[in-house]
Image (cartoon, rainbow, N blue to C red):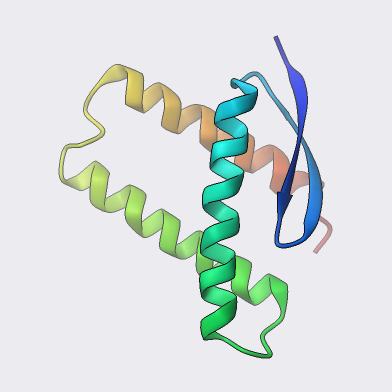
Length: 97
């Protein structure tokens, strides 16, 4: 069942359409928000898009390191990664560059 979960990242509210559990989507958003705050603190004066790109690269690095270490070997984790990827694709498709 697809539902809309509204999350707050970087002081902006985003409606996220997803079949994932609402609590899990909120947990993902909190993680991204924390990464954005940390990166923003280190890069004073940077625009939000630059910070978001650096955060995305950092999260991709975390994912690749887990994948390469074999931590993503289970079918459940691969499924979760696929669902998160679809969620990200949907969110990026709504963002106007």
